[in-house]
Length: 91
View 1 (cartoon, one colour):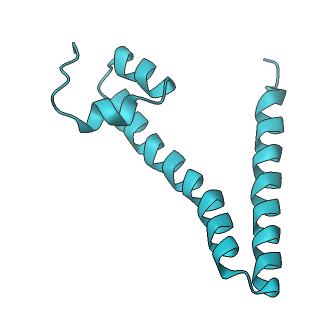
View 2: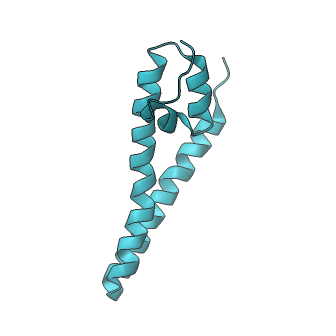
View 3: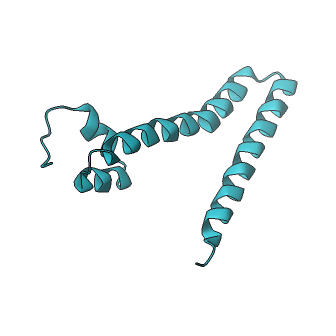
């Protein structure tokens, strides 16, 4: 089995982006720009929370063996379908 190098590159880019955002936030704090510091932290940490929230839905829906819902998760529409009880998908 070949090691997926793209996963490693993606992980390194994620760590670099988060580290840069935290450094920029500390720079804004030392300069006294509280609004820019808060916005930087918001835009750096909110996607992390949303990804974890999405993984909860994926784990829940995978246990039901519903491939259409898995496809919707890949298209980033899974939480909308999972939360709205009005959309009826075949089991």
